[in-house]
Length: 467
Ligand SMILES: C[S@@+](CC[C@H](N)C(=O)[O-])C[C@H]1O[C@@H](n2cnc3c(N)ncnc32)[C@H](O)[C@@H]1O
Image 1 (cartoon, rainbow, N blue to C red):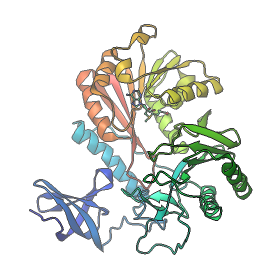
Image 2 (image 1 turned 30 degrees about the vertical axis):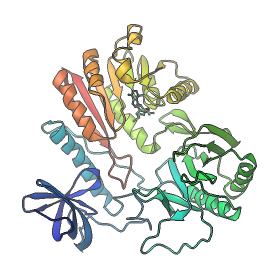
Image 3 (image 1 turned 90 degrees about the vertical axis):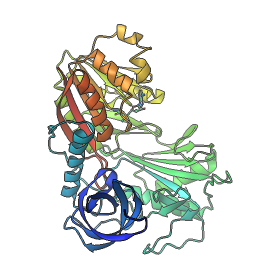
Image 4 (image 1 turned 180 degrees about the horizontal axis):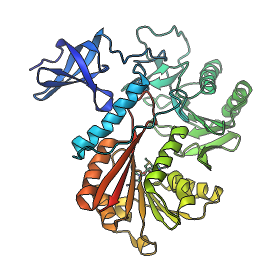
């Protein structure tokens, strides 16, 4: 058995779930952090079990031909783009294979029909939302660009598992040049004007997060400064100075979070410039995005994803659609023009309000949204169903954890003819697919979509037909 701390030379054979790669030591499978298939590397054993081991690369001996030079100066330190050093075509192959593996190994399907993954035309600057943290200390690492500051205000992204320090980021390649300008201005302004950073141990200090949202199709930009208290004078001055430097900002919001929990949400929102809302488009539909509302992070790919949902659902004008886990209603609204009616179900009240407003502002009158936990809304609290027509199609887009088994059971009992299941986690999707197919469905086809280039995350659409 391998010993923890032992170093050995291995050839990396394949990519595995969660951004790891796979090597073999004799019969033993070794999951390796930091390797690219094709590398020969010295790895250090982190964990050793009877059937497998975990290791991390300490030295690349022969680099894989799939390696490319990462563009970002923070690559390898920042937790954001773990695959930036992998050729994009190879990233897509790995993601497609993960979907196949999940459905074969977890779902126990034989040769699932996977349509080639829809890659992203733009691999950088694709994100509509970035959330930067303030910290009093910065993360120091070997080879960091020179970054002296006598003022304890740093602003950037956390390195994985470190919440007390941030990488003081000058340029992130995920959102836009304008976003970087806002980031750098905000840090410099805070230092210049003597602002303090919130410290959750002492519960003192002002600045907590900087959230930048962009409407990729509208070029509208929201700057949301999350602070620990309400200080209108300070915010007014910041807003005026920001607009002078970055006149492309269309709205400035201040979210006030007085609680200890380090989250970029709060109890109060104040608007200092514009309406407090930006917009973005998916297809021909325009969506309101407020500081607290969810919106797809990659608008361009979201349109490809929803188009895949529409194709899979083969919607007809007479169809009744249930949109389960409907969030802010974007899928239901996108489909609304092709069907008779949509009923969305969602457990977050503010998302229901956003969905209703989004439908109204788009002149959509055939979508209704019901608040509630699906586990209850499909079982003990399903009186609404007696007032609603039975669905022809269900569109399902649950969180990463997938569906509660009871929900799967109830869906199979309601038995719509078609189910289109969207997931950001093929592992839980494959698990749920197995349950659906054990009841009364067959899995017809799968369409992976790459929403997040340079990360190992993958979105997948599955079509099920009633037997
Ligand atoms: C992946 S998102 C779906 C987003 C949605 N398609 C949209 O475009 O806004 C999953 C949604 O499921 C909701 N959710 C999570 N658990 C739920 C539950 N048990 N019952 C109902 N909704 C739930 C979350 O609040 C979230 O809005």
